[in-house]
Amino acid sequence: ISAAPRQASGYVALGALYRELNEPQRALEVYEAGSRWAGRDEALWLGLAATLQALGQHERALTALRQLHALDPGARAGLAALADATEARGSFVEALAARRALVDLLSREPTSEAVTAALTEQRARVRALSYLLGGAERVRGKPACAPEQVSVVRRALARCP
Image (cartoon, rainbow, N blue to C red; front, side):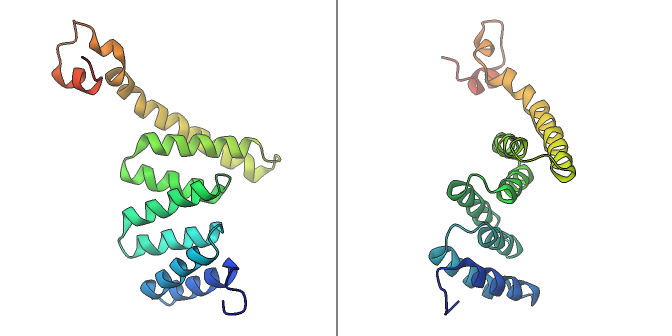
């Protein structure tokens, strides 16, 4: 780290070592310093998010994953981690967007057995999330504002006048 403070590899290695030694607070210090100095590395941000999760700081971990996605939208592992984290929190719309972006990335990669398997899994998860959210669309859409809709809750969710 002293020899190349702008290189993420030193921060990633030291942070991973602290995590292996079960010292997440020290790992967090290393990853935070790395994110300030060598900010675009995917492994650095994933390590930061994992460390924050281990410390029980789930919202900060999710923020780190969102920041990784903003810095590097093509980070495949970052998108997968973001999708998993948002699914776990119940943020299904954001998870669906992340999974769709991941399917798009995988579709553009050269075909291999591993890519095909990952693409199949992500497409299945997109279908599952779409199915899950499909029921919500009936509530949020403008057809819910029709006079025959008597539910106050549905009218409020659809933002009816």
